[in-house]
Image (cartoon, rainbow, N blue to C red; front, side, top):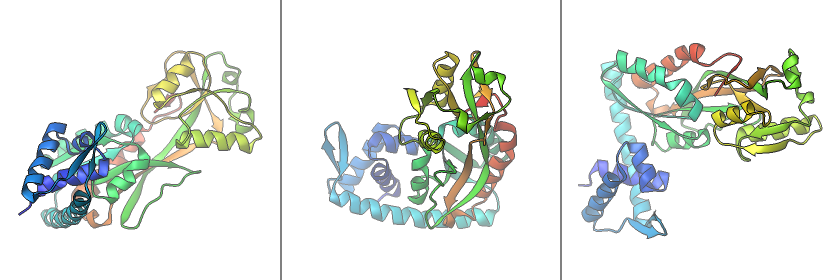
Length: 307
């Protein structure tokens, strides 16, 4: 009989595309995942992974077995959900994926409260880009995802996935100290042309928002610096190198040299929790979502804070 934990390891490699990615998602070391796959190869007398350059690729037999593993893991999840529902208390393993600023600014307090109130519940957090998290929920790799969307790019929610709104994350226009905008109570979007912008890379929703917003007022953004992390954007603004639009969640007080100026209409990104419909009855899911919503009001930040 095939070992379920080894099938889970193979499934994780198929989803994340690498042994290292599977290890991070499962909370194992890459060596442990490799050992699980090697044992599964001996059990099945089949080659499952092939070397491709510096990485690995699944063989055709491995892809078939990973698909079967996904079905089996779904059956196990439904059984675990039924048992937990009958107990009426959050318990077992809850895998949570969250985007960076939520993992930093919202999840620590939520995880601490869940651990204190429900010792039988083990929560494991993985930081994941929001555009990947919905797919991870759909595939059963994670149980609960915290993701966000903007008005220009609504979050696609496939059939079989449910969601709840956690809250709206307001964004500020950050400018260097001494910038002319600091003398104004409000800046309008039509005023943004001609600025030197610091922004996330093309393809990210924040970058798309900037391009669409400025083009709507007849301007083209002059992007002088590009950075992945919002903390880096803030540091570059504080150094006087440009301006940026930054959400409030997760950053805390601004450093000297960076000033938040209200921008109207205010850019907003909406934060969601997502889970598979089949797991909706789990007390762990219900309790985690409730705790996320309760913590939102105290951790979402105010003017002068960012993600």
